[in-house]
Length: 129
Length: 211
Image (cartoon, rainbow over all chains, first blue to last red):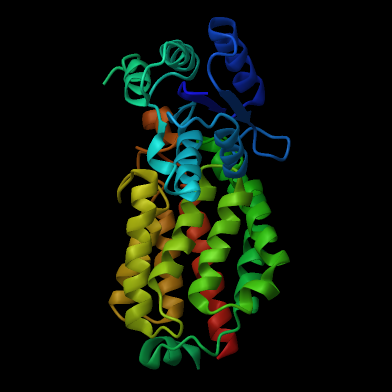
């Protein structure tokens, strides 16, 4: 698919899956979408390996925007991008935006064929700077 | 004796990495409940369990790590921590070890260890978008680096680390989950800082015991 992919990373698998449901309701299958949540051991948290897997699943040559909830989700997502490395790393951006609103807005933008830069900018507009 | 080793020649080639791994995993396991309690006070309460999971995973593969040259071993340990810790501590402690491995020489003397440690601290600060004074692990790492620079003995360095962890108590958290609490983060020790102090003492005592 040529549209930008969206990855949702929450500490809670329920939040991540619920957010993904809201995105699907808006854009259907027009956008590559993946989510992950939890520490991989049944608890709340985020997991680099799972994030790398979600990026693979939502991969698009147009790039991937990642929406995160709290600090560790951001740190682990940045670590995942670094471990994936080039040539893909520069096409993966961790957004500074509220996870639910950011994911829905970013996906909606992506479904219209917007570039990664435009998708990320749309998500960032939701964050008070 | 090893203080001599660390101070004068500073070579660590006689130190068995497997023993070091075991000592760090032991101390994290022994203090997991304490670390969790510290994190429960001003964080999300998963630090002890997460660190224990990570260091036990490292312990499981200690033999394989110990067989590698020191830089490769540290990088591999860091990667293992990133993959197994499962919280923000994973990338932060993982980055510490990965960066140390990237910077250190295969048989470091004190000067090269100190320089590599300094670079590793910079990498942790970049990963956490943090700096000294924000009630984080950096507030223990930096004084340890200073103590290394000042030529302090191993046990003195471990004491510096303990004091630095204690010194996070009156600080106000400006990074991480604890920062959400604002002034209410004051009066509690930073869990990440405490972990660093525990690891430093374990490494020092392990080196002391072996030399």
